[in-house]
Image 1 (cartoon, rainbow, N blue to C red):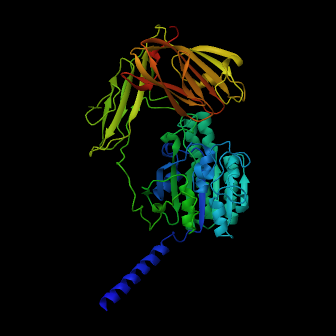
Image 2 (image 1 turned 120 degrees about the vertical axis):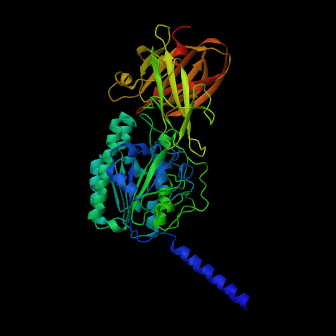
Image 3 (image 1 turned 180 degrees about the vertical axis):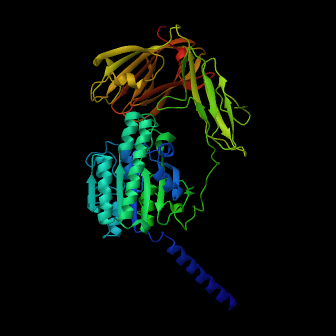
Length: 555
């Protein structure tokens, strides 16, 4: 009899526990979600620009500083992913050329209009009376969602008009889900460069617009039951984005308002498509099986981090080697008739930084950095920081290239004006422009802008010279470029990095004898930001920028 009673009590306990869990399946009291999407907003931008409003939101809300985007780190596929709860493999929007009537990969599942289900359409199906609206600065955002899911759908040409209309919409309609998109930060990144003064100024402008949106929410009388989320599609490097680097493929996710933990940094891994899942979670909606996103529950009061969360090795802040990377210039620099002084800044609290100058990756036995030191030859400096428990940071690398004038070093560089180029051109068919001597395979933005036709940033460059190989053996060559590039050794194509794309790297290998070898890099830019770097690696040489002291005009 006692065992039967115990059994029944156990069942009752399980049922009560289950009921209790069901109550906690979504946060309570949130009636409105406002998403502020900012194209091109990087964590670096938030941390370095004047952003008192966003800083207050992070201090009084929850933040995830390294939300991972989908690849490539470009706009269409990431805006689509954040409202569709899945990546390009599922929704089929793989690049900025996607159009409803012109695309190669169909969505794995589609609604009547042919689009993958979005948070807008799912919310409409589950809450037919919900007020749903989007106001957007970039017109391309409007092609990504189901029009019949929206009560309000507006596009404006400036960030100010976009904000003004969205705030008016909030006050008048008090939306269940309101989504605003700002594009001016991305414009600054492309025009002036990510990390430039103008870029940070555009982020500060975002902060002021966010403040106005928050004021509008308060004036609408919905402040106490509204969740505000700040999200982005990508960051950037130099004047562009699209590559697979943390600077391009990580954004910040900020949660503020009703039901959000205060001053909390989310630990679980978060991806751009988790935004839609989080909104569905807030409204107690079961997300479609085709979605791959997971709600960021840990940002909400009453919800813990996932029980099966695996954090891996503890992260240690990487050191900074000066001169640090700026726009498209790699850390280090080119020094003509100069000897650079190397300074390293340890960012890890109570950490120790160790470095090498022989090409090897530093470990716990490498030399400890204490004071700045001087270089007298081309050197790759590598550094890592170690905390008190021996955990190490990511590797920091700087390329110091030293060359003396009058030694015949350099590359013949020729400019060609293009017109909507989509691949490395046949240079014989283009009109040859100015020629000059470059020290290395890189592009001087100011110089190129002075050569371009008005309103036409499509151009091509050809670099020609000779590379000194000191030790025979197998060599790896690589180009990092935005847009396409090809590298040739002795007339043979070694690296094919062609086509329109953000900063991407491609490699190739070749056996070389000691001596000078003809080297040629062909490059083009279709439009927008541009960048070129060329690397090599070989016997006794760590991967590095092909240095100026090994490049010659004549054989």
